[in-house]
Each structure stands twice: as structure tokens, then as C-alpha cells.
Figure 1 (tube, rainbow, N blue to C red):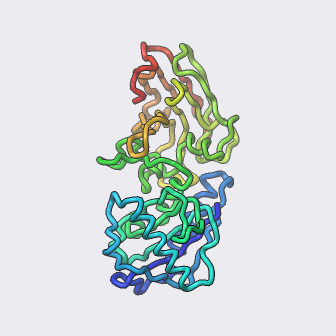
Figure 2: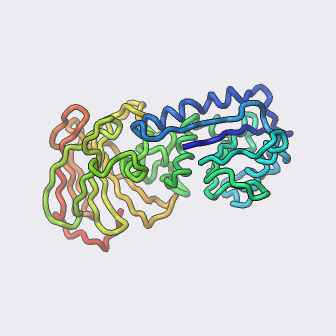
Figure 3: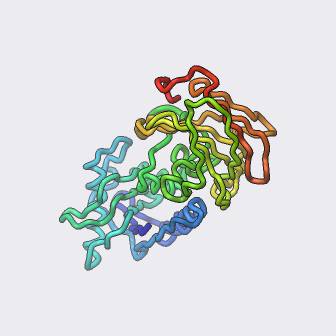
Length: 331
């Protein structure tokens, strides 16, 4: 993924002691290393940047009215102001890239948070710049750190927000995904999304029907490991709903010492971002040392941890043991 970063400041909130190189180093190369690790080497973030100067925005930071719920047009105008500031100094527009990062400094609290612009980015004269743009604000420095880049770039790759529109950040997915909580205990993407992104192969997935009666056994390797073995099991219910079983054991980008075990969650691809398209059933991972069995009556499914073999878990999945039907709520 080719990206380009430019740095901006404002008359009312200038960069002061910040340096462009210092801000670049705050985010990179750590965000690039995160992708190298999480993707098993399948995604390289080519993070080019202009560190020659801060580009002065034409309006005061406060005039951008940067609040939650910023409109599409406001967001687009901010990005185009940054591109015009760049073009006024350079002889050409930014060369086309996959993603553009517009980074405001630590002394710009009026740019309160860091949304992703989800449309094609063009200059005001119509020149194409990038497929998406991430506008980095004050929350990156106050709360999230470099992993904000990995969360927002997830949106560039069309991953949904997994936290709720209102309520506690971990309401839907707990501590298991950077798209639900940047500071999560297990801040990786789910196996489901790694498969959609092409980081996991079809042969690393077992698929069974959630509506058939039976018991299957699977040896699931840790999501964080470089093993080319099985990484997750899908219990398909219908065309939009499935139950996913994966293993999380720490390591990789899950580097905060979370307890290892099996994680179970449901997906519904008909549910929109911020509304809970993925919801986790295991507050703590299933393991032989703790709770080893999970029943999900609405799905007629039972997941049991049978053995642990190094970073892999032998799991039995029983389906069809209740009267659950496809008409039941996915959650």
C-alpha cells in the first residue's frame, strides 16, 4: 500500500516545538511494522512523507469546527485546503497514492479526533490524489499513539468500526480488535477480516453449517503465529450470518499479555459500521485452565476446548443441539 503523509499547522495553533520528522517518527515505522507483523508479511505499508515543513492551513484550527459528526463536505474541504497549501509551495500536486495522511501536530487540540475520509480524494481542480484519506488529530497524541494509523488505515481497506455509535467502546467486541478499541488487550484484526484481506488463505479455514446436527473437531492455530495451518472455523447460518471460532495466544501485535485461548464471535454482514456487525461471545478466551466450554443457544452451538498443543487448540464444535433456526437474531 503506497501512502503519502503531509503535516499541517494553523495560525491560531502553530506547530511550536514540534518537528515534522518527530511526528513522522511518532507514527512510523511502528505502524508499518504492525502491518508487516499482522499480515504475516503480506502487506507492506510504503509510508512516504514530506518532512520538509509544516504546511500552513488557510483557516484557524477553530474555524474548521472539528467535532464528531463532521460532514462529508467539511472533511473534504479540510483535505483540499491541505493539498492547496502543499501545491502553493511545490511545483506539482501530490502524486497519486492509495492513502493520504494529513497530520496536524500536538499543538492543534481544535482538530479533536482523526476520522478517515471514505471517498476518492481529489484536489479542487479535480486531480486524483488517493482512494481514501486519514486526517490525524489531537486524539492520536492524547490517547491512541501510532496504532491510530492501523485503526484508520483499516477503514482505508474498508473495515468497519466495531465500537458502538453510543455507549462503552467494548460493548460489541470487548478487548479483541483494534477496530473496536485501539488500545485493546488483543489489538489485532479478527481472523475473519484477515481472510477477507487476503492475509489468510482458504485452506486455513474450516467451514461447517450451523444448522446441521453433528460434532466436528478442529485443530486451530493461534491467529498471531506464522503457522500455515488452520486459523479459524466458520459456522455458516445463512448468506449474511456466521459464527467464527479462532485462537488468540499473545505475540505478534497482541503484545499486552492477554490470556491465551479460544475466542468466539458472530458476524452479520448486513449490519452497518458502528451498529455491531461483529459481536464477541467470550468475555475471556476459552481454555483448559479456565472456562473450557461455551454454549450459544440461539445458534444451537456448543464450543469445547479439548486439548492444547503448543500454540494450537483442539476444539470440538457441536451444532444442532437446540431448536435454533435461521430466523433467530444473529446475536
